[in-house]
Length: 276
Image 1 (cartoon, one colour):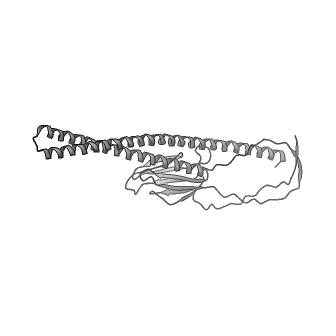
Image 2 (spheres, helix red, strand yellow):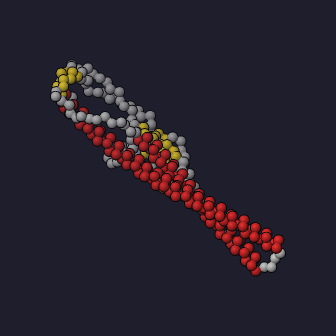
């Protein structure tokens, strides 16, 4: 099927030089830092020349590093010839591994130049459709970054909960051992020492109390072990979510590159057809 279009051709677009408002490089000397802004294809420098301890940070899915005292680390932020790790405009969350606090690095795209149209005569062109391009919903890098931050926070919270529960279980084991030891000692006192009936009754009551405490400790121990098992299950689910989010991010980035190539091919064919 052939479709006719009446196109009002626009002449060559003149580009005027623009002064970019954002810097091409930024420097980080401590964490957390205020929201930094840098141009695409720039770089960020982590300087620890005057620090008192080493820096350790990670931008999940993008980069990570450790900078010793007296050293400097430079991270390039390319947008071309960078495989699946291209730093397009958006917000990137950088976590301090010591405090788990997040800081934001905003990468800004260069401003689009304003076209200066020159009218030319209208030309009637018959053009076949080149591709049947399906529209897809755009997913920004910042949304993926936010999802990664949320999953990472959930993962850290689960790990902290598990560590706390393990500590509580160890404390209960110690208390249980102490109670059993005291119970054994009291039983030995009853068997080996001639005491009055009143003292015997008191010792028996203490033994019963210790037995009750031991039973309560065992019940609490079983409850904590059940919670630990549940936390481990939730941790496995969160880790799986983290893997899925990372895979989806990579798939969307690959799909974006594919659609970009299709759009550029369409533009090339239209330019050749219209004789621009």
